[in-house]
Image 1 (spheres, rainbow, N blue to C red):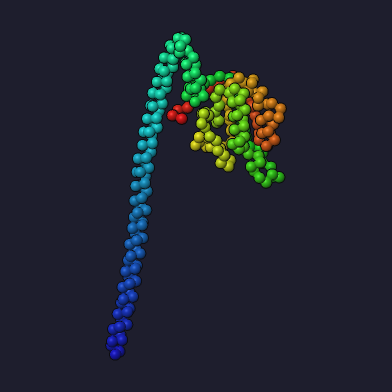
Image 2: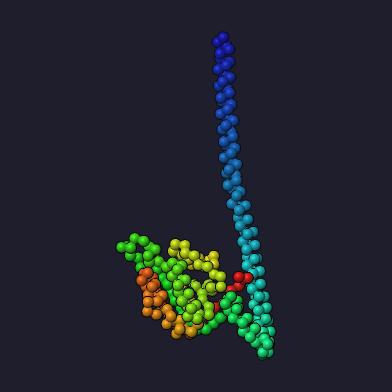
Length: 235
C-alpha cells in the first residue's frame, strides 16, 4: 500500500511538473513571437507608409498636370468667346458666361476691395464662458452676407475662396470651411468697390457694432489691388 501511495504521489508530482513546464514553454514561445513581431512590424509598416507616400505624391503630381490642362482649355474657351462677342447674337451670352464663372469661382479675379480681420477678444477672467469672446461661424457669415449685399464680386477667408455652395462650421476655437480648418484670426478678403464695402460694414448699428458688442476684435482696411485664384474642381 505504501508503495502504491508513493507511486501515486510521484505521478501527481510529475503531472503537475509537466503542466508547469508546458505552460512555461507556451508563455515563453508567445512572448518570443510577440518580440519577433515587434521587430518585424516597424519595417513592414515603414515599407507600407513609403508606398502610400509615393502614391500620394504621384496623385498630387497628376492633379497639378490636370490643373494646368484645365487652365489651358479654359483660356481656349475664353478666346473663342471673345471672338464671338463681336457678334451681336452672342455678345450677351458671353457676358452671362463670364458672370456665372465669376459666381462659381471658376476664373481668377482681381481688383480693389477690403480686408476684414476678426480676432478673438482678450481673455477676461470675469467672463466664465469663453464662447462670449471668441469668433464663431455666425460672425463670419454676417460679415460675408453684408459684403455680398454691398456688391462684393468674390470673397476669400484666410486665402480660401468662397464658392456658391460653400459651408462654414464652428468647431471650438477653429472654423471649418469646405472641409478645411482655420484657426483665428479670420481674414475675410472681398473684391468690390472698396468705398461702398467699407461704408456698409461701418454703418452705425451695423455689423461692426454688433461684433464689437460680442467682444470680437474687428479691423478693416481698404486695398487697391486684390487677386484671387480660381477654384479648382467640379463644385
